Image (cartoon, rainbow, N blue to C red):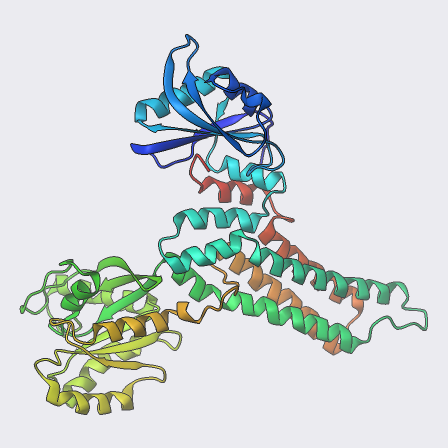
Length: 465
C-alpha cells in the first residue's frame, strides 16, 4: 500500500441526480485548496466541526452553486487529516464542475476506498473496523446493519484486543519459563498455562462458529423452495414476495429454471430460490432444471419443502426420497403443508407421517399459499431458523470470510499449543504456536498484514469512501 500526503477529492454520495451531493476533500492542504474556490467566511479561519454557507466559484469568479462546507481539523476527522465536506445541489453538471475545479486547484481524484484507507493508515480505524464501513454501506436489512455497526464501533476489535492481551500473557509466562529453566523458580504452573490457552481457544472457536449465521444475515439467508410439481411453490414465492414474480400454472413442469428474489422479513433479509419441481421426467430441459434444484437445495441454509396436502402417505414417502437425501444436518427444514383450504382433512395424517421421517429440528406449518392462511406463522419460523432472533445485544458476529479464515487458523495454532502443554513439550515449541496465534489474529485488525491484502480490501470500496 503506497501512502501519499497529497490532497484527494471525490463525490461521496451515490452517482446520479439527487437533492444534495457531497464532495469530500482530505489532505494536508484540504482547507486551503477549498478556500481558493470558496466565497464566504474563510474556511482557513473556521473552527473544526463547523458548517458554513457560501458559494463555489470558478477561476473567473463565476458562481457554480451555493454550498455548505463543513470543516474538520486533523486528527479529529474521519481520515485523521484535514477534511472539508462540500454539500451542493445534486445536479450532475454541478458535481462534475465541482470535482474538475478542485482538481484544477490542486486536488487529486481519490482512488477506490482511499478515504477509509487513510483512516486506517492514520490509526482512526483498525482494519476490521475499516471493512465494517463497507458492510454498513452495503447492509440491506436491519439485522445486517446492526452487525456491521457493532463491528464499526469496535466491538469485534475489542474482543480481539482482549485475546491479544491474553496471548501476550501466555507468551510472557512461556518466555519466563525458558529464561529461568535452570533456576528453581516457577512463574506459572503448566495447569495455569493450560487454563489460559483453553480460554483463548474457546473464544476463538466461538467467534469462528458465528460465521455461517453472520454471513447468511449479511448476504441474505438462502432459502430453497423445493417440492413436487404443482405443490404450490411458485404461488408461495409470490405470496412471500407480495408480487407475481413466478409463473403459476396447473401444467406440470412450468418452472424449469431457478428463480431468485429477496425480501426483508422482520429485520432479516431472505434470498428465496424457487426451483423446478422434483419428479420423474424425460424432458431434457426440465431434467436440467431438476439438477439445478438439487444444487440449490444443498447450498441453502433453510429448505422450505412445499407439499400438497392432498397426497397420500405413500406418495409422501416417495417425495421424501427425492428431497431428504440432499439435505444436511446444518440446514433447517421447514415443511409447508400447502392447500389446507382444499384438503384440510388430510393434514393430521400427513403431519403424523412427517414426524416419523423428518430430522430433529424440522418444523411443519400447514398453510394456504393461495389464500394466505398461516403465512405469518411460516414467516416467523423462517426468522427463527435464520438465527437473527438469537443474536443478543452486543454479541459479536463474524461476517467476513477473511476474518473467519484467520480465526480458523488461530484456533488451529492455539489448539497445537494446548496439545503441547498437555504432552509436556518444551516451552519454546509452545511459544511458537502462541506467536502464530497472535499473527493470525493480527491479520484481522491489520497489525500484521501485507500490501496485497490491503490493496484487495480497499479496492472493493466505492470511490468516495
